[in-house]
Amino acid sequence: MKSLILTQSGLQLGDTPMPSLLPGEVRVEVRSVGLCKSDLSIWKGEMETDLPIILGHEFSGFVHESTIPSLEPGTPVTAEIDRFCGRCYYCQNGMHQQCTNRKTLGITTDGALTEYISLPAEMIHVLPDGIDHIAGTFAEPLSSAIATAQRAPAAKDEIVAIIGSGRLGILTAQVYDALGAEVYLIGKNRWKLGLARQLGFSHVLNDSQDGWEKELLDATDGVGPRLVVDVTGTHEGLHTALDIVRNGGTLALKSVIGADGGISPSEIVRRELQIVGSLRGPFEDALDMLAKGRIEVKRLVSRQFSLDEGPAAFEYATRPDVTKVIINI
Image (cartoon, rainbow, N blue to C red; front, side):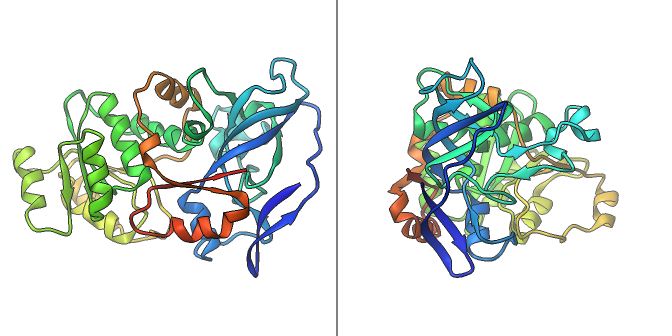
């Protein structure tokens, strides 16, 4: 079968064996894969993993063959990204995302930029009616955004500042908005900020321009927001979040790639800040929000490519005005 493989020499289109189908597994015919920041970071060498590897973990497709009667061939599906052991302390206590033996698609084990992939049935989620293969690729990042809102909830009409106007920032902003918060979305890219305005966000601030801090302070009685979410995964975004969160407030970290360090423990203590992290999220909640039309995803897609155009898709995804790139298999 055809696969896009990352090697020491870069991305290469190659032939790989059809994956076997073990008891309890489902073989999925992959239809679409969304490129994620982690895919790009591994491709650029910023995030280490063993090579060669097939990248991609935000995907949708159809059941090709199944050992589970309820998952019939042709059923549209998406999947979670972690293979977990089910035996360790965390698995036994409902924290599969912290499994000490987990393998993550496209990061520590082969992912979805291929024609077929076999996965344990517990990773598979059926796409509800009305969610096509493109929207299905958003289930994983949307579930991740929902996890942030669950671990760092906001009260109705409470101001929440979100640092980062990329795809995940806009998804996170939509989740908080759908849950009743008043969202202030902060970023630098004028095109992405313009897209956020098109999606209905009225409080969109460009932090490369003067005066944005004053607007946020004025809206929060001069003390700053209680809850700030950083989705940039950069030192700059992290420090911006620290600068604007009020004393006694909560800083939620969604993306941490490339942002090791940079937080002063003494500042956390002195300012009585809470730091909240989140990793994976609830797929069923994400699919429910998509099915009910509470989250707009189609306008986040900048361009679609074929698998044969995979290397070009990765290059295109690095452009500053791009939010989401889809590779169709």
